[in-house]
Image (cartoon, rainbow over all chains, first blue to last red; front, side, top):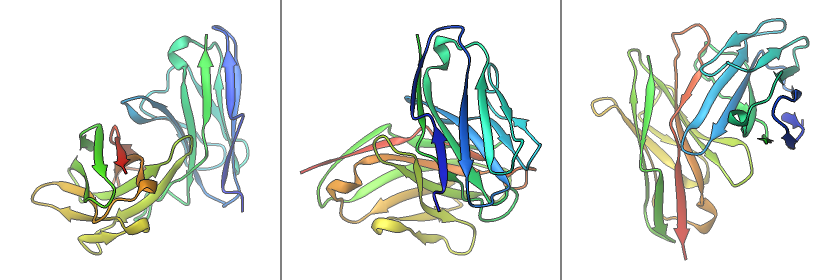
Length: 115
Length: 115
């Protein structure tokens, strides 16, 4: 099993450009998450999904959109990139969300720079 | 609302010395607590988790953590540091009892190990 994979690993954008980050998991997990990690801020939840066709806002959703058309994929979109979105983005998945063992499995991250 | 505070953004120890990384939580419901480790340029990996079965939790790589309800703490320890332990460590609490069981992360503690 590959676990959680993210594409691309690195990306440089100019202000105003758009892009989509792809997350894929092969563990048949119901829940998927997108986080951003900034120095000294820990991980902050952007959006999450509790199942195919569902999405919900996290702590810092502004400027991002997501889609979960297939259970194994969770896409994060930036419609008009801003320098404040320079960050490392992590995708995670878990079997479910409201249970005791809410272990989340993380992808390797995407390093995004917006100039 | 739940929250996590990690005391000390950077901890430095000598090889062979005790590792102590501090985590305090705030939760209105019985919490589920986690420690994750992030090695340079990698995603997060679960070290250990507390799910109310036992207050002393043993994890991978010789780490353990003790849940102390009276102190609202979940400190991470390792008796003898190894160079390979150099990484960033994140404490997290699950808002189990909410509808999604999302994780709330602390800001992280970077551990350096001196030879």
